[in-house]
Image 1 (tube, rainbow, N blue to C red):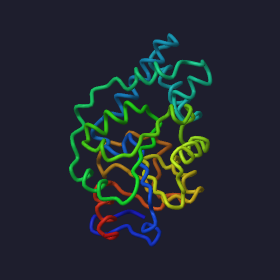
Image 2: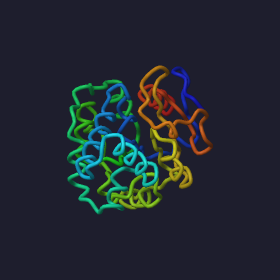
Image 3: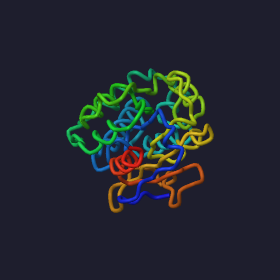
Length: 239
């Protein structure tokens, strides 16, 4: 179901929601901020330096690890037992000045009843620095990052189970916002309400081709290309 700007996405189940879970990259900030390509390029540089490969070979291997292991980092841990801290520090050392405060998003998240959490395959520092640029960092109760998930990334079920346990989440009373459809499979199986956040028509789309779904799969309850509008409509109906 695609959300229209003037149509509230409320179901009866939203009235019982007490936990709102947000992915970070390309979910809380729009793709035109261009942060993900910067991180993606840093991964390539890290791997090229580490393995001594040319750029094209490194890129291909990086994308293979991402698809097969959930993240490039997980692939490097499994194959080379690398230090994840050094990797995360390097790839998240980027310019974030393209991210500007989002007053509408701040107002919409602040108005949600219950807890708000960030659940990211990135690092805690990256989530905090990026949400600070958006002006929303103080709205979240916590950040559950890849280290908290013991470096097991979404979409692996173990990552979600660690997340649920850490925060005593009742999935049937929680909502998850994500830009990658496969990362919503386990949440839906656990009875969370799922929302896929996609780029606006004509905007940049930094997802891999195989990640882009033309029609919402059964495990996606809602699709929106404007998170702030979606949340504002939802809050208005809950009021």
